[in-house]
Length: 405
Image 1: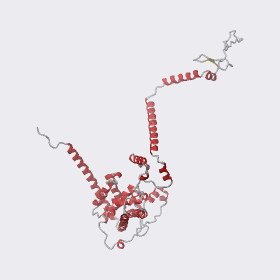
Image 2: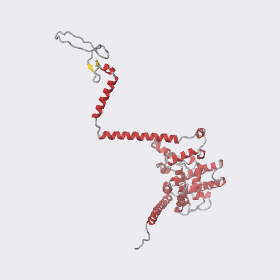
Image 3: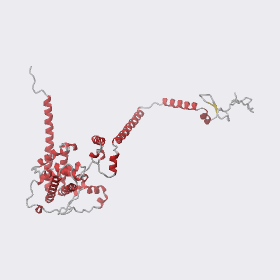
Image 4: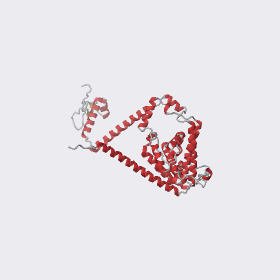
């Protein structure tokens, strides 16, 4: 062979001839190893790696396969792998859903231009396809995830510490050092609506007649409409003052219809009927309406100062709505009638706010107890009504007259 060189070295201790073969790769060094696959002779690891790509890859592959065959995974390893695969699959599905929702939420160029130019976009401005996407987003709850649920100010701890002056105006209360360091307490206080900016006049100056004993009932009606409106607008009535006014007038029989309910039950029944109407049924129906009664009880339990602040906030709501009526042309109601109704509502709220300020604080705990009792009766009535409907359904399913054989 041309690439085989046989050499004979004469040793001082032995006369044997040692035969050596030169490396087939570098042809510089004597070979010391043999490739197990092609029997090629090589001198070192670099020469082995470069002598044949097929040999080295197949050799490594065989070693890996043999190693994997010897590995027997236990049950714990199998479960871990299944969990990883499931998690990967769920993340992949979420990514696909996000891409689909992004595609579905794409607005037309015309709508985007209106938004960028600062114009207000209403539902009527959307195209037919955009309206369908918007309605789908509402139905699946996609839009509700973007809204942080509102925590009523009357449920805050700071609402228990509202103080007003003898004239009914807001007192400037210096914070202690500990309170000034507490950001959460400060934020809670800022959420409570401010009281009157000017002193409240005595009732004798507003009317020569004695206040009606039904004002306690009317107060429940008005507070209910206030709490419901704030719940409906997630605490932000300023986003739509005119819409908020229309909600107040539709829920409150005293403010919207000139009603004169004579009992707390009568006032609450009317409010619950309005809440369960098709216009507001999406809020949760009767269960939601009963929950608003708890809001009224909370306000009554806080006492006069808290209710004065609530009524003052309600008066500001009415006044802002009145400004919109004067400046804009209402689309869905007649302007003159609305202005008259809003003005009367504003006067009634102001009168009852002055009346609340003059009442003793002991009166509110009694009224809160009465409202609690009436709510209990309403819940019991609801349960009896459901049971009666169930009994009727079961009766219809039974044979009332059996044939005698």
